[in-house]
Image (cartoon, rainbow, N blue to C red; front, side, top):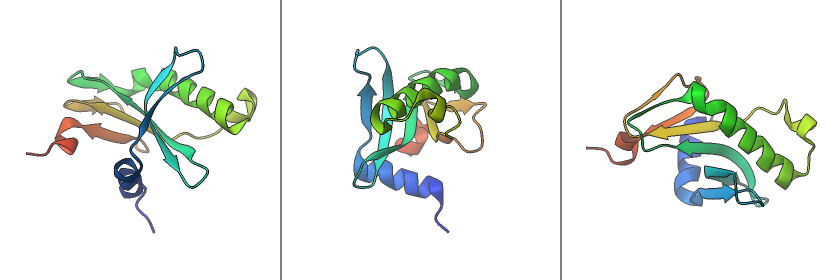
Length: 114
């Protein structure tokens, strides 16, 4: 069985996550990891320079932006995307609080050990 966090970490390194802005240039997603030849979005990330962030507070906005991206790229309707599970990631300098267990959490210490 593949450890999903290891797979996503490898995807982050190999595929260089990209920032995404909607067509109006108003909504930004800090990191979008793409998979496969079709380059489907598989992970959506929000990075904050704050020492600590509350993932529960950030989740609704990131979820909305991720679903909008999927609607724009996959061609599905908003209603079809409403029940689609999303893989989310949050990054802060020292701590990410209240993150669900299926969330990829990253801190500066993970990126710059020592």
